[in-house]
Image 1 (cartoon, rainbow, N blue to C red):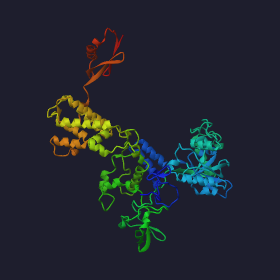
Image 2: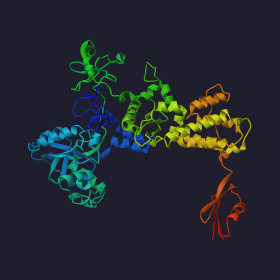
Image 3: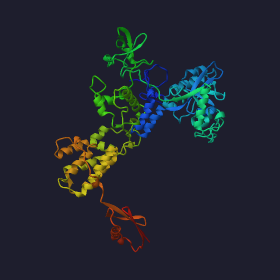
Image 4: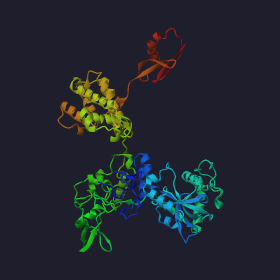
Length: 638
């Protein structure tokens, strides 16, 4: 489907173009349906503290919500008939160092304060800024750009006139869309001021502003009634001054904005709203679900009108006997992805969201595995949606996902992201056909830590196939499986059950598979594999290789599926090794090893060492012998 004429979210815009299709994107004001997610900002922030999520992901959400305490300050426009604007700042104590202001290019006031000499430059810059997403505009490493409006603001604390600029790094959707710039103590403001020759005045003691902004804390200087104060006292005193002089007030602000909940495209849930001449009405529950009409042409118009406008028989309807028209925007894809996990619990329920007893049993989700790219999209929206439903009494828990883990990306053999254009895509269907599904699963779990990005290695999947082939031969050709016991395998079996169990629970699948490989290699050196150990091992392997383990389970004489078998247990005492391999060194260099019992007496260890090393001395004289118990035996010779 063509994307032109459709509203997009910030994360769907890359380099001024739509993520899908590469169509040019422009920023314009439109009436949109929104969800008031900022009302849940503090709830969403506080809820993060009790979640077992990667700290990096929680920090991304905290930054996206962006709770900050500070003050709103009113700046009057010099030589104007009452024009003014408000800035939000977390550091009102640095007002004496504000040497210019920056406004978001799309603000209406920009048109009113731009002088005739600057009008052309301002208009051209506004067009350029309109083609960028918020993420691109706020990129810290991008080149600083901007245009002077020709007008000046009056700094309320000292009456100085300071220039008013527009720049795309200021967003109309954050704060007031206006900032005061203190270049001596903000690196972005510093770079901007340095580029455009704007005055830089230090108001905190410390650093060298001839080289860079001083972003630390220090005693106030050049700040009149704040001189000598620290940060906390300076902020407190400045806010009192602003409120006393009626030019500012204390304020808590959030970066989080309303969630735009409408798209001008066909595919999506219709918004169940109708318009009468003088009001909007929501459809009654018995009129839901509202079904999309069939269309011959699904493409949106270039003017931004939804393709549903073409379905005139559907659009034109009645409400309470009056003529009405339907809303033609549809909901975004996130409308469904924000609560699907709740519906999965009771998908055929025709009377309610889901049965409350089932919700109480299944929620919250124990483990969610997904990519970090959803941190400020799906993962945040789902938390908001679930908290809202909790407040309304529809779900029993506030947070939907107790534990979150991110899976790494599998890269091409060249270490780059798989892409058709790069020719490094691995087709899993081809791998299954050549090696089998189990080999593919085992290899992907064995490649490395689940959260890491890992390059594909053709030799790796071949190794996984050989590992499974070895298991198949052991169970079908070796005749080792017996009712007899084998003390030689007791410790490694119990240790393997313990380690694999723990590794699965902590999602360290690669080390779990590694331990199972060690177990199989050890078994192949023995003549007997007790049936208890043979069956227990298949249960351990089953989660990563379900097909071969089901087949071997059947070969062992079981008619039921292995999937519902009780998980194997281990004896902690039997996981502990009774012997260790002790390295023997000459002058710090390894010369031999011996097997000793744990806590073996030192004289016994010394005798075993000399039984081996005496023949290796070659006329050398022993100067000293150092034994670190159960660790190493070092002999100093000359």
